[in-house]
Amino acid sequence: MGIAPKIPTQRHWDVLNSYLQPLKDYPMELDEFLRHWDVSREELAFICDCSLTTVNHWFSQGVDQRIPSEKHKQRLALAHHIWTAIQTEPEYLQKLRDVYHQKRRRNPAK
Image 1 (cartoon, one colour):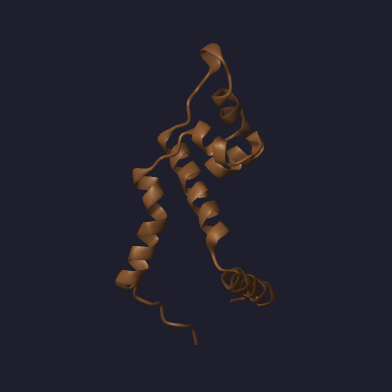
Image 2: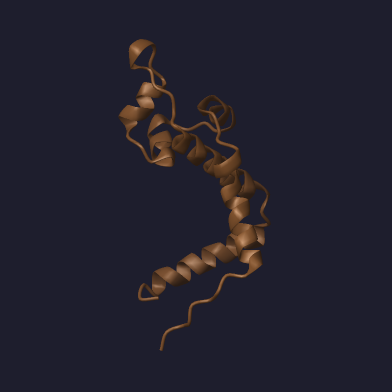
């Protein structure tokens, strides 16, 4: 017998909105992101869900230069938000997350 799905409460929606807020209101410019985080171009491509070629165009000069789209800036903001949040989260939350992931790996059917 399966578990019945839960109806999200207002608290659930509030927390989700707090994580999505950087996506709506605070798209992050590439240079600002790079002032905070030392990442490779390959890692930028992963974060922004784009090709390495696209990222390389952001660093080009002249006619080949492109700028990150709003979607890319939103993903940079989200990565920054999450990475900043985990720096201040209590250690016990990280341990709980680790236990949860270990348990899920042992029971792949769940």
